[in-house]
Length: 378
Image (cartoon, rainbow, N blue to C red; front, side, top):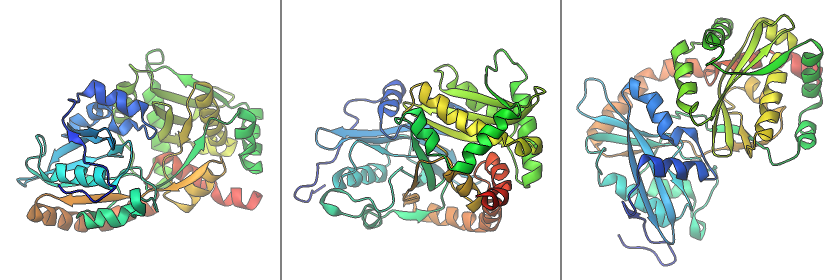
């Protein structure tokens, strides 16, 4: 492939060889460390028919660019669908590295031979530029990538935990600090739960999630899904289960946290009606942030601002709002891609309904339920 002057040469694919342990170590050391790129996440997804394959390249000038790609058969069709969750990860987003990544996918490496389309949603902020001032979105379009439905939240808020605790506390809105203190004075207690000790932990977690789902009118996952996610990251100590208990010892709010490298995210959580009255979710969120800092994390990702009420609640905890470039498709089979997009278009009305209901994370719906009261109190 010819290179423009000043553009880094493409990565040398497959040199050195990458295996799951080496890739996991690279992901955890990366500034954009994400649990969705680890082999533990591939283990979680395997029962649903997803198989992982690594596509990684590197060069002295561009560094490493690559991803663990999850591949799944398309029902009743001769093609498979490939998804790169929160990837690829790049040391440097150069025009040469992006072009080489695209060319490598088009070459259909092992594991992608019968794939119709590759979808990726890298954590690249909207408005980012490549070397030479090239707009990353314009360059994706030039290389043949096309905008696709988002699979992960395209907007989030990240809290910098390198600040000291007083600074983090002062970054909360005044009313949010009052709610945290109100929950404390009401006897709400936050505790880390060890599922190996409390063997009914996920029954309790699911009970809270079911109540939240009924109140919000949104579907929730089976109890086993939360347990499998937690268990996959438990051997490395990267998953945490946090419960908020009222003064009687009843659990009224829950959070499942996952850490990767020095970054913590909160993919799932829920709250009962009683927990909302006690403002237990405010104390739970604050303690999750505070204790993550104590444990050495450098950032806390609230994982999605998919609804105005959700955004309002999460903004109250400070941090910086980020919007990513979203999901992008690269067609490897024109016919297979057309069939896939027709199927997605048929499902779009249902998907839009779930998004209007705030499907991004069930606790978010519970949080949004207090939105009108929060606004009135400010």
